[in-house]
Length: 200
Image (tube, rainbow, N blue to C red; front, side, top):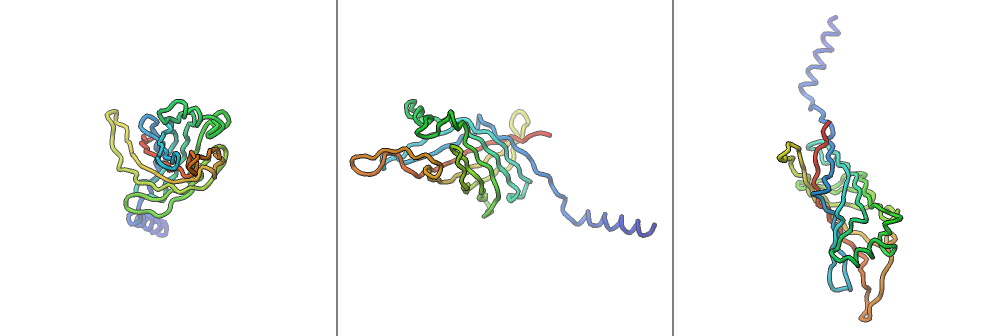
């Protein structure tokens, strides 16, 4: 009886000293307030920018623990928009994204590294045209949660990286008379993400 009492007392003491483990929260990306953008060099002299207008997915993390962040993001390839219809049709064709065969682009996180005051690096697998390569997203955020007019908690974050499109099998190009090519290989990617807490 005394042993049981001492054991109960020890457990109570530990519970007062050790921090309480907080479970991971799940946040659902809001497509209406999220944009996946890209920038690529045109004719070696200027940048062309565009966006994918439909980005979905989830983000999980324990509050106050950046190392716990996990992200699962899917982008609809057909939602590409560079404000020029003919160019967008070309991007949807087999020359580039081949949306009939590969309707989505995807990012699945694997680990967190280089945690800093304003954010961290999120390492994961990026898949384009069924080719998967490891990339590192530099993440600023997430912000502290706020409540929207409907009472939902929301957070925001920005993420960026640079890839070689040839690494993903997007090889189309054309040379120009002055030397160089029509479309650059390096593509800068920027995500502006807003997410809503998934309620239990």
